[in-house]
Length: 172
Image (cartoon, rainbow, N blue to C red):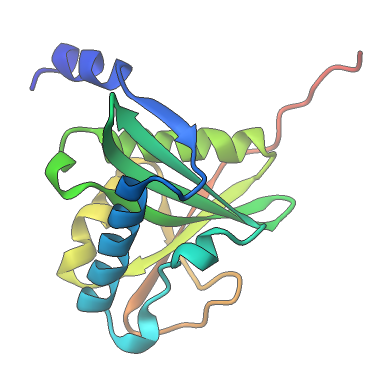
């Protein structure tokens, strides 16, 4: 798909704050958890289930084209200047169409809007997670050490992206 065609397709996508009720969202989150369990050691599965995504410090968004769910992404509030990306997942039939990158861009913009100076994430080090790591690197994320409640492990890799100083808003 050419650059112009991809832009036209992506412009038809809407991203919404999600309430975790839609069957397609629940199904994609179930798939996300199944894949995390299948591709990670048992002590290295940090994907959030529905209850975890309903926590007050977590927000979830879904990307749609018409009534087709394309991707999901969540953000956990760590502190006033630091957020964590969680539960990034593109629907299996939507891979390599740009929806994951669009969701990641939305989450980065949301992090800035919240005043975060940094966004971080944890992901796996094996081949199953290579496409995600490549997407994060293209978006400016760099490897870092464990953050938040994570501890160093042989399986997990940690990434962060500096969002810069928060915007200064004029008084009035």
